[in-house]
Image (cartoon, rainbow, N blue to C red; front, side, top):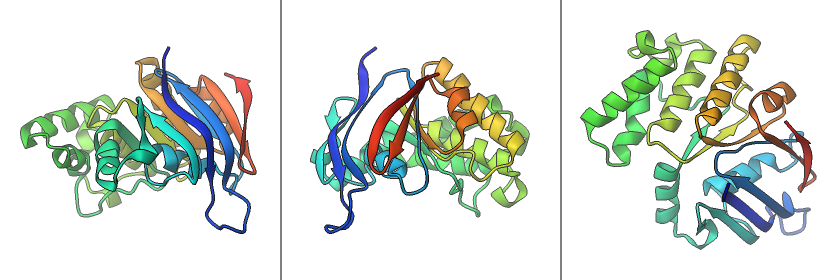
Length: 226
């Protein structure tokens, strides 16, 4: 397998006088891998995910995704990278309350230039595959936490990203919904989807990751082979 994500000697400072959030971190994620990054709050794991997403820039070092050095890109190019190259699943869903489940999934596809007809067809396929066909017309307020997270996964996948990022994807759902999310991520990876997730949930990491690494005080170390 070839490396799809590579962080090389990456350091990230938020305060010039304080310790770095990440300190000379090296990490590779091969295409088709599912890698879980674990660590306590404030350890630097979300910073790492934000760097790979192009939501933040390293203070030094290189962040490479699919052969592109992200810290050399303009803000416009980074936005394009997020829109077409990656999908992001957030802890708190970030669905638009005034849009239905289907409309939430369709929106990023249309922003990426997909025709409305194709976007609707893609959204319906994803919602159907995630067991949400009957909930496509429901607004987020009428969905359970597990349903909202599955809609968020569908939205993240609508543009067929080669990399799926997940930031504490079970943190805002109950245990049963958390198991559903874990099984979904595992199935996606088995189908070839490259996944990078950050979590404090050891069960989630063991259940869906092929490799687990720990972040502690801005430093990364291999933890266990799942």
